[in-house]
Picture 1 (spheres, one colour):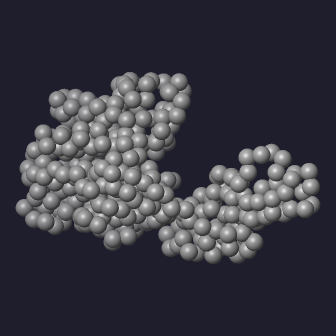
Picture 2 (tube, helix red, strand yellow):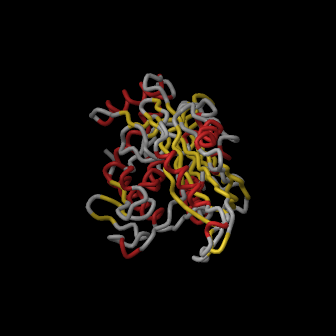
Picture 3 (cartoon, one colour):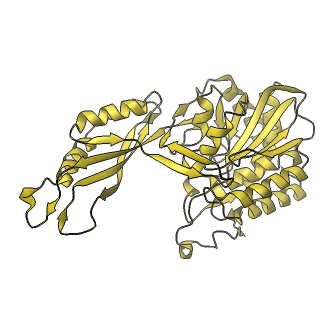
Amino acid sequence: MLPPQVRKELVEFCQALIRIPSLPGEEGALARLIADRMTELGYDKVWRDEIGNVIGLIRGHARHPAVMFTAHMDHVDVGDPALWPHNPYSGVVEGGYVWGRGASDAKGAIATQVLLPLVLKERPVADVYVAEVVLEEKGGAGTRHLVNQLQPDVVIIGEATKNQLCLGHRGRVEVIATAVGKAVHASQPHLGKNPHYLLAEFLLRLRDLPMLEKPPFKATVAPTLYFTDQQSANVVPAKAWVHLDWRTVPGETPEAVLRRLQKIGPELSFSIPVEELTSYTGMRIRMKKVRAPYLLNAQHPVVSKIKRVLEMELGRKVEINYWHFVTDAGYFAEQGIPVIGYSPCEEELAHTYQDRVSISLMEEALASYPALIKALQGR
């Protein structure tokens, strides 16, 4: 495995990452830490782009096949700190884990990716990029910007896989379903038109709507948030709307989702919201609330190479899985770039009060990267 000094640096760097809060749009301090560490490690080029992604280049003798390792710097809110076993920004080491918000989504992966030069014994055949991105938790704005600048031949994404391989996930379309009625005093409901009933009838039809399947995925839809235009309890509102979270399968478009909803709710209107974001660099972005699904064939040559070399390096069987959640992989897949999920982080720990990353899995991942790069670059 790793030499003791490299293991020590890996744990300490992961702790340092966790100790810097980096909510979406507030990744600046973390980005500086990562860029400084890349510079110290001798990357051939280190830069931050307009949106705030941090990119390091280890230059090879050829431009292709270029490999990119990527993960996201932002994390979700900590919630109630009293519910955590440790301070969520402490980076405590206990039980073989580094604990804290973002540890398994995805600072454990960032720690291994950034420290790649510590385990490279020779210069790679072709270019290797390490790109740590912003605003993943807000729709993946950082990666959407990144793919317009860099298009590597293969991407290894650091979303949680527990050092197995992930080859796909469903997409996500957020939809606002709006019912318009007529507001009246609640003492005379017969004079108005209550939008709650319109939405209730629609939601019952939605509950029974057959959902598309494309193995290994099945689409789902869940009503999540509910709103009206009123705050007074003695008024029938004029308008009510519900937020729908629709998880799409490959080939299922946002337009197709809207058509299906309109068919079962002709009396309602449906729209996909757009969120206005500002990155820590001051760049303003509009993000339509759509994330693409992706599915890489398990027989793809890249998958075969990675699976074979990892099983040799790790001395165990490597499983092929699929994520339950959405990642930035869809942005690369839309460009025709094969994306493989490989990370020491664990999906069941992400976004929880038990957020932590296994030190042994981080060691295993970092130690395996050189062989993985050689295999992808034809050696």
